[in-house]
Image (cartoon, rainbow, N blue to C red; front, side):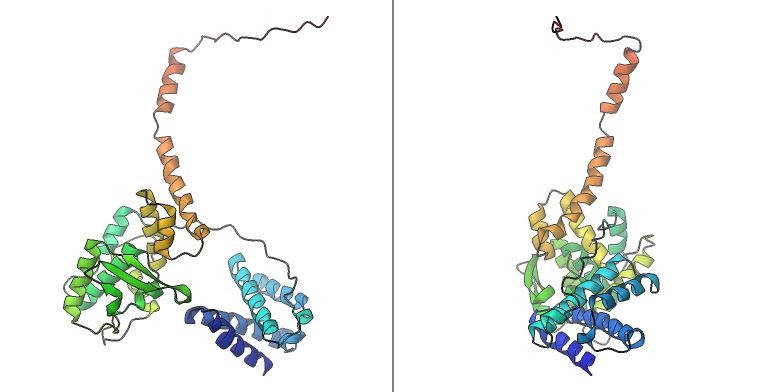
Length: 323
């Protein structure tokens, strides 16, 4: 009973107070549920206030060796458990000295993987895949145009309302993580795609969902992912394509066009510039390719060919007297 009560209290009070999105809260609950199941079967079903740091370490070892979880998954578990026990201390259900995560060793941070992006040809093929002669095809074309044209997240795309888009000002207002809103500019070609979809779908009230299913209901984040994957299969793109990969491609393409990092951060809705700086590593690969195309290698090779056996004189400084 204590476990169920504490997890529910954490999710419905602490997490909601922090402004976490429902999907994030559900992921935290699932993580805590897995830990609770481990305690039930491996640790004699002890209550959460009877655990110590050694028990958590054994659980992390179990995740690695028996479940085959990688560094990212283990780190996420540590973050959730630390937040969970910190919340119980803050709400007066646990004494600070009994917190098993107090002084818990920090797990070594894993190297962040560089985002994989689509080429210009792959992006063009993807955007042209949905049909133009069906409402669902026009909707899918609108989904792809919004994701690649603005860099918005899948959840932000799915939750758009009719009133979110200002066709006169060429902007779209999205609700991001923590309920924060930002207004993004729309390219004229994206607006044209959206107008075609609205014309086929029919008029709607400002509060109605903008992207709807076949039955007229609001689509979900999972539907956005499924439609992107389906379009990628039809376009015969060899990479795994997702809404987040389109978000990476959006940011990388802007950076290659000379758009500043701060501007890209604001468009993506990142809270910290460090989250945006990863795209610098992607464009660094472009710089390396540019350096390899520089004619200096060809010119230096020509000079060496002209002077194969000539040794250049070496000038020595004056020798100091050793007397």
